[in-house]
Image (cartoon, rainbow, N blue to C red; front, side, top):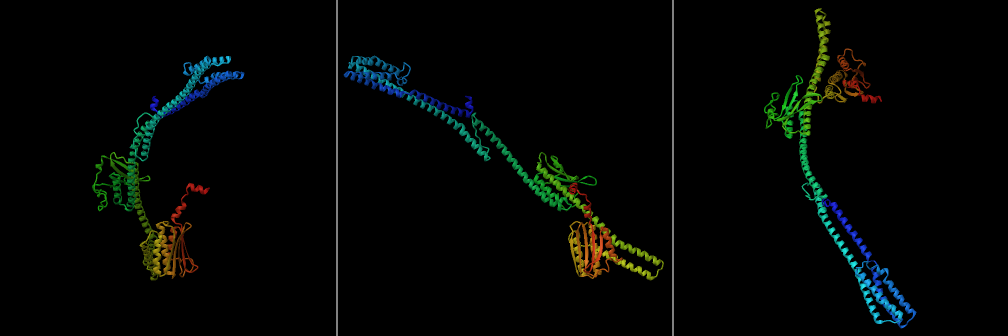
Length: 630
């Protein structure tokens, strides 16, 4: 019973079993009643034929009485035997109940008694005496026929009773089946269909992300338990979904804030890399925007002093006064915050220290203050690390730029010193020796003609030194439209085109940044010296300067269509050619002079640049070496 109360499935199964059992019982009872009614019709027919048979016996007796003969007598006996056979036949006795108390059994006994005690003796006596007593025979006949009619009526009533019993049983079982079916349908409707509808509504609302719907099912069956489970699940889903929505909203807000911070960092990168060495002007606006977006601050940047390993405060946002290290009192980048703070005001906060480093080189520290208890998410920490890396890159690049500027300045001074030593210093040394020679001649009172030769050499040396000085000044005063040798050669060819009044062409095919400043100045000086010689001696109407890089070597060619050389060898005392050869030797190259087949002179310089030499000397990686070996 408890199982039926707790289980809807058990109730449905019990209802189906009850309906099936009643259907089975109804079928069995119907078959039993039908089996009990089998032969009732035959019994009624036999009983009805008994009545006809009695009349036949009486008629045969009357014929025998009128005409006694053996045939009529035999006919009487045949009819009498047929009557007795029918009266004792199984078709009739099988339809009569066995119980002696049954009315039909008693009526059958009365019919037997009437036959054996009344009609059968009259028949025997009439046959024996050949005389029929009409009155006793009619009375016996009427009594027997009446009993037979009663028995037939009782047989019919017995059959009708069975039919009525069968109908009653069918109605009873039909009613019981209807009751069980109604109960089952009521139970299914209230405990299955209605809960399923509520569960479907709950599922549909849950699919629409509405977790406020509840089934509120009562009971202890499966669907009630399922409904309560769904209610609990919907409540948990509602809380989880609300929590997830809150987390998604927080995450979305954090992503938007991170995107804004990334945009600030992107814009700040241009400020950092375009602001020179002034971190206040370039980094302060970016740091202030990061503070506003992330709701943190203040932020302080400290850089390591490479000389004494001391940390120097460089920048602090929300500053109440100008920093002591400020180099530009016209800058107000640190003083424009409407709510300035002091570091002591953040004693209730927490400080996040981030290294400002490039590789293994520690450049400084970035202090980031935030309210105590405020948890910095992983994405915020990554953004702050990116900020520290960006500041480190900016500081590192600024230092590298300063170092490169110092190196460039030293290289430029070295080049100027070398140029002065290779040209003007040597000329002045030569003049000094000539002056010492002249002093010795004067001390010895040498002839004036001998001293005149020395004066001529002094005049020639002074002119050469003055010319070299002008060439150096011209070279160092070249206003380059762009960095590198190409711009200097372009201005040089333009200058000599104007001086010569003839076309000077330039063909330049060299990768950028291939030559160092020393190599560029030597190539430029050789080209200027060659063009100067063409201007003075060649009487040319056309000249060309070609510079190209081929087979890891630089080739410089200066050509003209002038008068050319007497032979392919340069004059032995030509001072400009000697300097050109010295410059070629300095570059580790080779300088050749020759006449062109078309007329004019060709000066060629070939050398391997320092960068190419470094590349060829660089050992190959193991992987490439092994691949080439294979």
